[in-house]
Image (cartoon, rainbow, N blue to C red):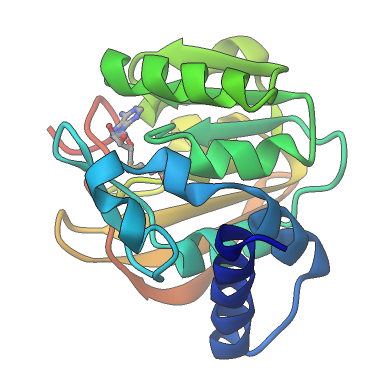
Length: 213
Ligand code: SAH
């Protein structure tokens, strides 16, 4: 094992020790993905610390423990149709692409979307469909989705997103104000939506029609 692989492996073991549960699939995938390639080269030495880091344009790559927890709570099953809102660096996208070739990701900033796409393709992670635009309204064309994950803080769980969730599907989304949110897991059972509060979190705001203005 080279030095980077072993540092990465230690980070992942530490994250799950602190989370207090195991998720063999998420652990295995996170040990594979070279997070240092998803951060600015100036930040590379911090890529395997459990912290969010700037990726330019006022945005951040999410904290690895938050990515671990969100993926665990999303509980994607192989082959699920997944919608990700907020591609950002593409790190979470890379993780989700291990579960399914039916992965749709939306980012409002064209520069970030293109950079993520270039990097993911260079890692041979294909079969991802990218959109540049306002993901606060989901992506109607491919709905319904078995899983929806939102990587930016929203003011409310919008009806638009709920409608794009398949029956039996799950949505993981930070809800609150611009500065602080609670991570929610929303499960759809027919016309009823069951919400579970997973605790406090901090994301950059979801901007757009169903987000912050
Ligand atoms: N999972 C990403 C998180 C990036 S931060 C990572 O770890 O790199 C959240 C991202 O959501 C930012 O890139 C931001 O530009 C994007 N975003 C904010 N509002 C959005 C919207 N309405 N539609 C799509 N993307 C949005």
